[in-house]
Figure: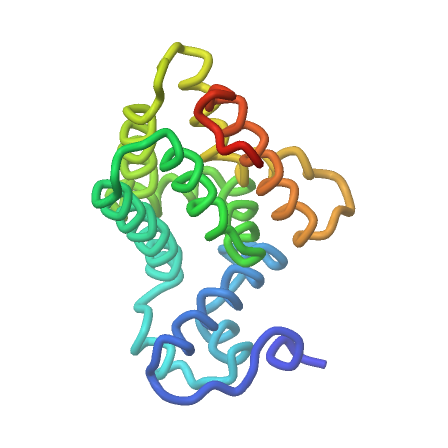
Amino acid sequence: MNDGGRLGRATRGHGAETRREVQRVALELFTRRGFEATSLRQIADAVGINKASLYYHFSSKEDILRSLFDERGSEVEQLIEWVRTQPRSPELLEVAVMRWVGSFSVDKLRGIRFLAANPLIARAANDAAGNRIGTQLRLLADELTALLTSPDPEKKVLLRMSVLSINAAVQAAVGTDIDDEDIVSAAHTAAATLIRCVRPVADRPADA
């Protein structure tokens, strides 16, 4: 069976669904074959579209990677804006962190894994995208830190650890045969545990 049969499905048109499928398939090919060894033709064939249709969405492999940084950065920006519209309360801290962690998916985990294994490629793509993820995550951490009732250094670190739980889970699972779904689940559990360490007992609901 060829890569198209394994990885992609015949996708027509120029919609968001095709774009997401290109990103998903490209990441899988980059991870399995290597970034340099993967061509745009192979990506198009695996998705089930022609190369012209692929160029409608992305001009290069680097453009595909930049799009992933841009989209994840936009997700953080949207969460920050949401936090800023909510009543300020200790409860908002936990809700916001778990809202972010709840956006983790297996596809996003695989993206983090690829980028962690290819730091030079990741750095170039991130720089080209304006380092949106790093910048926005720092802004998110600052917004959430302002919600702490007693923002001592340890709690600040624990808060940031909760936000980055998916990255830690990916690294912890290196060299194991743990399923990606279980890694995502572990990241959710870690974030929930860490954020409860940050919030004093008096600030938590009675059934927390």
